[in-house]
Amino acid sequence: MQQEDIEQKDDAATRASKSNDKSMNDKRDQAQHMAEELIAEEGRAKPRSALVTYLIAAVIGLIIWAAIYYLWLST
Image 1 (cartoon, rainbow, N blue to C red):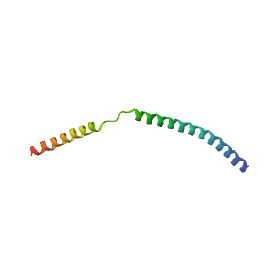
Image 2 (image 1 turned 135 degrees about the vertical axis):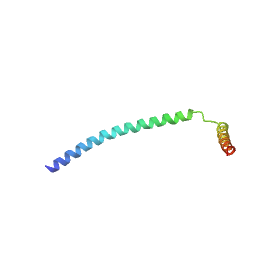
Image 3 (image 1 turned 180 degrees about the vertical axis):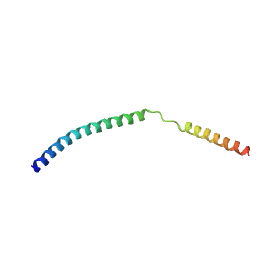
């Protein structure tokens, strides 16, 4: 009796494992497809030029310098 229960549980676990494997394979394929789409989309994106990055850093630096200078003058 106990051996039959164990065998039935093993059969049920095997069936559940096979269906779980199929859904996991489907999810893996879907995730891989989405990753490939994102990589392709990144390749099409136009990267910011170094000059624009430098100008943004310069403007932020000037703003910080002006704030510090203003605080120094007010003391």
